[in-house]
Length: 193
Picture 1 (tube, rainbow, N blue to C red):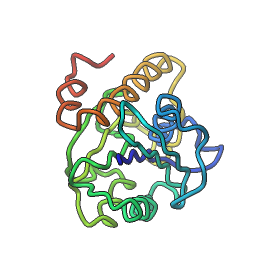
Picture 2: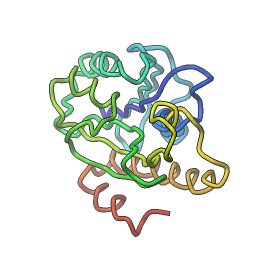
Picture 3: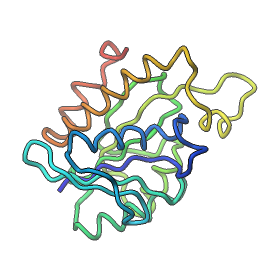
Picture 4: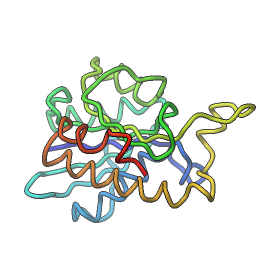
């Protein structure tokens, strides 16, 4: 079993905001996994499916971003997964990457991402795979908390949509080949839109 966790905040007012890019990517995995609609489970929206012979679960915690770890911990404990063995991939936004840039990593610090920080605390390890999706830094005069809860600009929509599709492809590649291959395929700046 592989577990993909998309980070975001529940509720209509957060839909399509920068901070909810993890939810957006996770939601688009359901069709290629043949999983149908998500159900309420592990304090989140949860679905199971298959991809090229691999069982895959998708989880979007509904605990709000800063408390995502408890939901992830429940799913990991239930399925007896080892996050350090490339069984878990967390998908989240990243202020330190340009908009639409993708970066796979096998572990590391939260880098200021509060959802990742809570998962690290609840799992008691930072050695789990993650896919960071760049949302850029806020312009001068706009607070980070306000910026991440805004939608992408109209000018950014086309390239963001292309990057979301690349991210979905990257997650499916991770299911089959693991994080190291994804780092080689998706992290290079030249590959970004």
